[in-house]
Length: 251
Picture: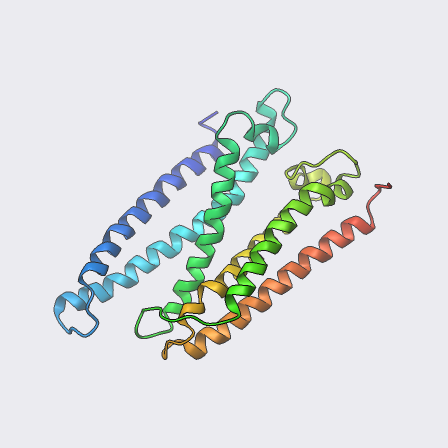
């Protein structure tokens, strides 16, 4: 089974991403130890050029890490026929004790990878590459957005899925990814993850609000992220409302 193309893709991509992050981390440590923005030496110029390389490597690595979450879930769902009694990805992930811990780890890394990409994008707009101070409001929005993400996932499993399956006892969070249900799980999870990442990004950018080179840029960027998060949560709500309104389930 390990020779299955999807599994090989996950393994190879994980190894490549890990090596790229280790490479970036090693050079990042060297940069932190030797960084001196006031210096005009050749060493400092090399370090400044290296930051762009490291930023690019990490950007691609974390973007692929986000995509790997969807590949992981798709692979688990696709391979359920290989396990006796498995009806969907839930059975595949239960095949051993690593399935669900890896899934949770991938979801967490997906959220934080997205937040880092947002921070890095904003950081590139400033000339001094350095975050200071604290602001107000953004942390609250990030906290509420994260809480909304958790509640939405719990609601999807506990009662929303019942309307999608039209069965009062079916709570599986993976069967909604299958063709029989119009692959509705993909837009549901995509909107939730996107909203969660944007919400975290708003809070993650708060330390840069009082930095002169980033103040206006960050404020405008935060507003865009907050708007995107709200729109994505609204899309999730509309999809759920449609599924519940036209469900064949009757209580």
